[in-house]
Length: 249
Image (tube, rainbow, N blue to C red; front, side):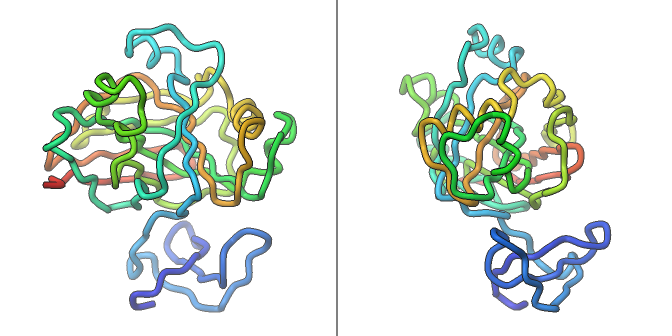
């Protein structure tokens, strides 16, 4: 494929990628080209128009951050420029922050334009699911009193390794490792507000577009990363998203 960027479908147990023409929304048309996975470089599986993130959506994480679980979802946005893919580097902005944390999360990819989606019909607008890392400059989050700068740096939203379209997200194991050591371990069944509820809540506020991503929240165990570290987010039924930390400066 050279330097071409294209969508593809992972086949044969993750060993082969079959290229498709155009984007995957509204029907998939195969080109007939197939490539061994080892011969392609995976990039972020989607570049969304917006990333809608949910804060404090696991009770244990809400408490480790010094508060009680919120009655309603806490919504914030991350810019599309924060997105990187698997094996790409998280750039640590050491001139601006002294603490940058990992936050492993399940991400939902929207499959069609929608607004005011009832919770019972949320499945109709979901394209699939992927792994995410809601990287956060924790000291700036506390300093600013709101989260845009702390969570909006370039490279602060790794996504991947691909989108799983055939998955029940109700009770999946989610694990985050730092240099191979487990730091977060939970199940999506512990989400305070489940995925249908989140889609209903968010779509009552804003129109969702194909490819938009909803980050569903991180469990307890968040902590700092340093330059040279490797962080991995593994979600049952999807795979592992791995990124190294480098210096931005």
